[in-house]
Length: 138
Image (cartoon, rainbow, N blue to C red; front, side, top):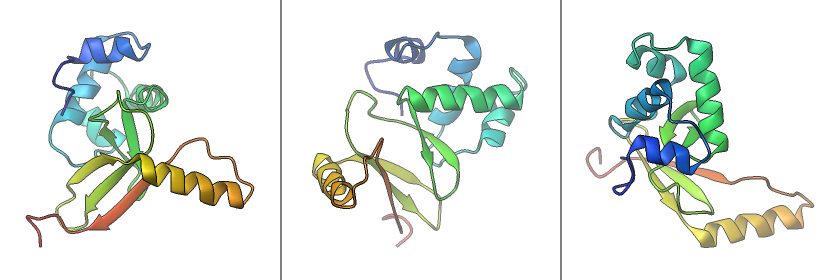
């Protein structure tokens, strides 16, 4: 799931974060599969390398840096597979198996900005989720 040209230390440093062992372990935990993971699940995956509060803090820092996204319907996190792509990111989420795929669509961002502007709202970020059934679960 990590960008093909970057390992986790390079990815962290490219976003202004120190490449500490716990952060690398969190990225590794999120890299396993395409199902969003809760902070508790990540904490269990890093096998006590850090406490749960620290996992939450690291996820918050990584989210601000654009390396992870919070999957709002579930509150779980996924590693961003395309952190170098600025703009609107969204999720296709399978309600049967939990698989989540991320997409980036600039046109969707423009539409949402237009809707927000008409309402007198200034967006800070965009994140969309489309729930349904993946090809394997149809």
